[in-house]
Image (cartoon, rainbow, N blue to C red; front, side, top):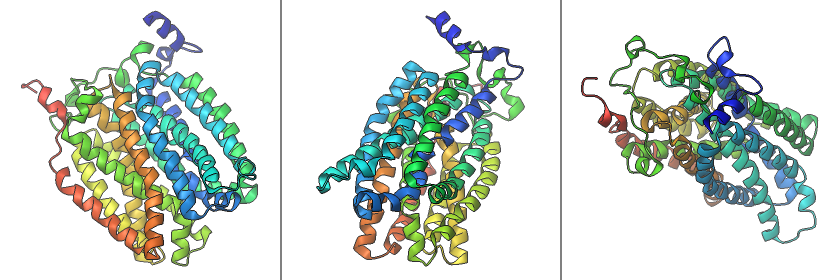
Length: 443
């Protein structure tokens, strides 16, 4: 069995024969794979929100409800997807994910035709929810999960550096994507844009996955980081303990750090997903045009890239607890700035908070779970966390929409959004890496 796996991993080429460590090819491939998930991410869906409202005939709140139902259903499926990932490996999983997202986008491009003969609200809601379920499960869920887990398996002491390099391109691409997708939608139509994206992802990323993705270095005759690294040479000490024990998903659930990190990243997903989903409406409320609002995202992308470089360099050398606390503080700043993004000072706070929390969020999702809980059950653990994040992102737009309808503006929404990160900061100070309990006392 092992010989068959190794043989398949050496086709169409042997990663061990590359002139440099193949893990860096994995970084490039998984970066492209994650960027390809944009149409299934809220930051990508948000560009199509107004178009879908007009095409389907749902109100903004009703569309948010359909989005919530589809995404919540996706979140329930992701723990199983994580377990399947552990069994099948990254190569097969990314091909299935990319093909699934491609087909889903092609179907969504025809949703106006699919709903044209439906008069009942329930029928419109169900079909729309199914469309969102498909792009969220294969895009935000499986494609992102597979790419993130793959990097975690190929690196150990350079995991932060590898993740940081990847995150720079991902962050800028994500934040630049609304403006790019808006250009495609205005140049073509929203239906044609979905068709173009579906073909590129369904064919191109599926092929990319088959050619370049590999599950782990050991199956390719390699080791993590490409060579054994003397911990002392990269300042590894008790601040970053060696990962000596692999936790099962159930064991991870019994630890305090799991829930604090999961809560912080889930809140990040909830708030930023809701902001991205309603960004046109948020800008309009403070007299910003659609183009002015989307012009903020490329700036956020630049700031995110700078922060990611610094955070990635530091992350391999220090405790993740400090990154957790910085993320929570940045979430507070982002909510404060979003209160009125037309005012220069608050707009700058929004950009800074959004960029800092987003860049560190990406690092935490990739680094935390293998560092704290090992690689053996990484898919299952990451799948559960991704499920929580997807669930949070599902209810975020709906909660924002309901609160806006109730209060008449987004003021109450952002006031409440400042409270949650403050509540998580205090327990965040008490987070300790579970691996410390299993370290050699001489270390």
